[in-house]
Length: 366
Image (tube, rainbow, N blue to C red; front, side, top):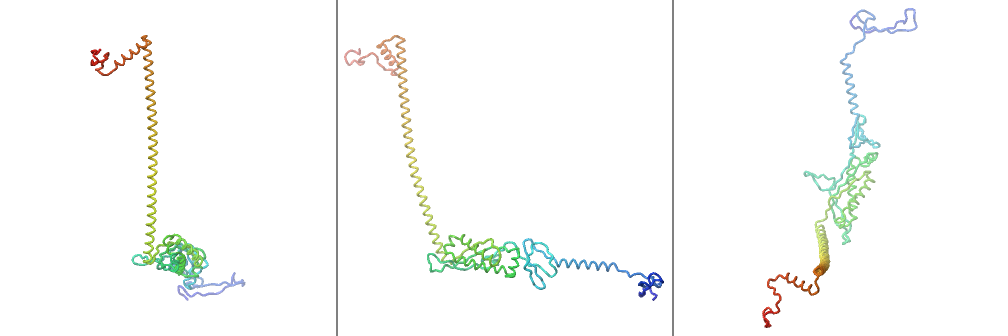
């Protein structure tokens, strides 16, 4: 044809000239205005190429996003096929981002403590417990062996932790997604059985031991049946029938009153002992004070006597010195002492040298 773009025609020509017959060369003619050998290859639209490339990138990104799955830091997961509903239970996935393929997702399980509650508590008018309080009976009453125990209602809570290894797949195979409900049922039966091994009085006087036994039983049995680890158990409340509680309260009140009176008697005895001890101390103090007074008086009298003797000795020495100095004889010394005593006499009415100062003997006072 003679158009701008004619129909391409092909043919084979000898290679290497007219004298060479060893091969053929394919000649493509796209037509054109100049006859054979004057055409060019068709051009590709850049916009279409860009659109095609972008579409492929978007499709690849979408396929990659659909192939990713994530697990939060406090979770573990099992891989589930959303098309066939088949769950891979022989591998447990840890927190992070995983390439799992299109049409698959994770069944996620908490790795933190999960609580089971048996209470009648509510929040904003709605019950928040997993199950109502546990109703059972205690063991036989020691004071009434034929009673068969007392009805009892218990509010209990406990915490467990799911495994993060292949046991998680075993749990799913055994219980599916209803593992929590299964654990709740097992725990209820265990707690009820343990309660029946204790007497009613034990629930009043030894509640800590009861809670410990319940925890040990739940820990062992849930580990055996459910492959989980029980970490804690709380015995929140214990309710007996009102009539029995009133009787127990009265008994406990009497016991408390007895204990109170015993302590009062001990206090009284201690006070009396203190009084006796105080009296004994006071008596010892009196004896010590009397002994001190006696000793003090003896020391004082001895000192006074010794002082008097020293004084008299000093006077004697002084008189002897005067007599020696003045050359007095015995009668003169006596007269000296007499005069000295008269001089020191304090009375202004002292009469000296009168045998009968009032003249009663007729001598006129001479």
